[in-house]
Length: 224
Image 1 (cartoon, rainbow, N blue to C red):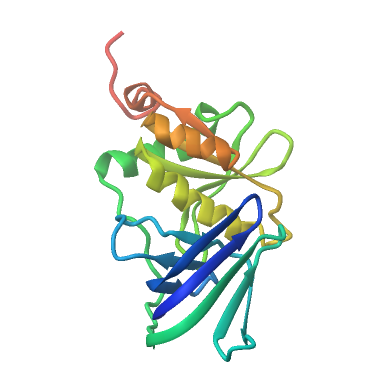
Image 2 (cartoon, rainbow, N blue to C red; image 1 turned 120 degrees about the horizontal axis):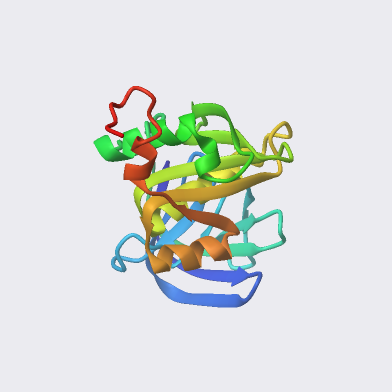
């Protein structure tokens, strides 16, 4: 990961246009190519960003200032003009193992892997914990038409889960053997804000009943 602290201006041109005036900010460039611009506040959310995959070029403008131009395949452009670089460091963070799931969440993933049709009719499992360079996808599946489906399993579906699945989808779409890839967020409860963001990202949301799924286990004793 490259971390640059600089006095900079930022311009975005895409679905809309946006301008960040001159100020001191942190610019993060992650190993997958994602570029994010942060202020010293506002919690985890960047002021502006460009998800991977993208292309980033560095040049110099007429006034001798370093300019980063980040372009997405959709034609969006993020231009970062570095007026003064205060710090520029690079760190090798290695491969992240992903979020550790609690007992219920891990068991929920196990149950859904054994019964993918609880998510959608005709859905079948390809692999559980499908490995990627940015962490494992909970369930990689195929739908009834043979299309790839990436499933992220959470006990409670929140915005972080949508963001995590979005990163997986962008990575999987690079593989011609898998694309197009559809995303599904599965949880016992999905918060309204997460549903809104998922809809914008074209990610489906499915709520499941953990207790009902537990009843599908063949080794569980029942009285009836």
